[in-house]
Amino acid sequence: MSARPNSLAARDGAYHFHGYTNALKNEQEGGFVVTRGDGPFIYTEEGKEYFDGLSGLWCCALGFGPQPRLIEAARRQMEILPYYHTFTQKVATPTVELAEKLVGLAPVPMSKAYFCNSGSEANDTAIKMVWYFNNALGRPQKKKIIARNKAYHGVTIASGSLTGLPAVHADFDLPVPGILRTDCPHHYRFAEPGESEADFATRCAENLEKLILAEGPETIAAMFAEPVQGAGGVIIPPATYWAKVMPILRKYEILLVADEVICGFGRTGNWWGSQTYGMTPDLVTSAKQLSAGQAPIAAILINQPVYETLRDHSNRLGSFAHGLTYSGHPLAAAVALETLRIYEDLDIVARVRALAPHFARGMQAFAGHPLVGEVRQIGLVGAIELVRDKASHASFDSKLAVGPNLVRIAHDHGLIVRPVVDSICFCPPLVSTEQQLDEMFARFGKALEETHAWLR
Ligand code: PLP
Image (cartoon, rainbow, N blue to C red; front, side):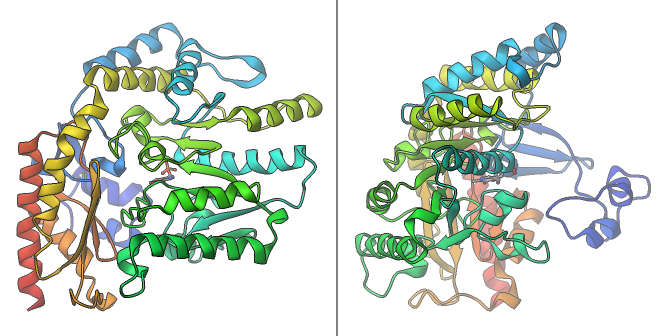
């Protein structure tokens, strides 16, 4: 199917090289052009409606319709001061206010906020901070970073190396050296038969400690981890996992960097995923819902001991010689600041908690379906994992591409969801209504039935 001549779709095919896209297919078929939004719905050039069940890329907490307060915040900032930077002590007003606000909201006491433009940049920057930290402490060997299988931390050279998805590495010459991998804590997939969540968590923690001892704790700087692994398939840690992992990191002086890029700002039913799981990170990286996806901005929160070491070393060297032209961009900062105020006015955490049981019921309603192996969710994020055999958890032959096919059928029914192999991920806008979620599940149900019929 090719696009109408001169349509936006055709022009996209002609001129635009997309990320995470089959480039030839886009050139031949043209792009999927979205022209406007309203609540959790988006509309195409042809006027077709889709429920975006992934909030764009896990970011549009407030949906896709115009937000008058964000428009006003952006307009006001453009009128007053459209740009200033953060090098050599300079800063614009909303950047100061946003840093203060984020430190106040942090999941554990934090000292400072550092700004970037994307989650990948935030994780890359956090890696550099961790290396700088250990150089400052005279521990030049303590540099390796632990990340988990199926982690997603971004796509830049360092953050992409932390990402534990083979497609992100293939033919990009990643990962770079110095990245260590540990277990993905997915009980349904990786537990032994009969192994409880707590026993599986113990095994994951023991494997982590074995890895640390085998490599030498004096060579390991940090572990990066999402509270809930999002783009790996919404993998929710088993009970007691974080309570068992954190003491091991402390014991060997390995910093914990919580990647809150998806979980931050209400997604799991608390301001932060770290709160949902009792994590006490040394650094937090955040982006996406920080601005409800409406401006490119990311923030790293840094605790006092780490900050003091970075500060003193910057003083010794004359400067913390890392920064981006758009770090703390005033337009993005103004939008993010107003987004956080909107969340507070909406009492977004209470709202998520009120809607989460309805979301959970809608998800769990599919648990008995013959194709569904596991339904998992927390707050307003979840996944439905499709299997060939419910009893053994056996997956479908990957050549069948069952998950991607279901997602294609769902698309025809006006629903956008994400397949991670055969796990179908859901992450609706936090402001969705119960009726809208019902509509999302109704569209998904049709796609599931058609997929079932196709497989028979
Ligand atoms: N970390 C997590 C947990 C993410 O889900 C993502 C993006 O999906 C990133 C980092 C990278 O963020 P960005 O795409 O803004 O670079």
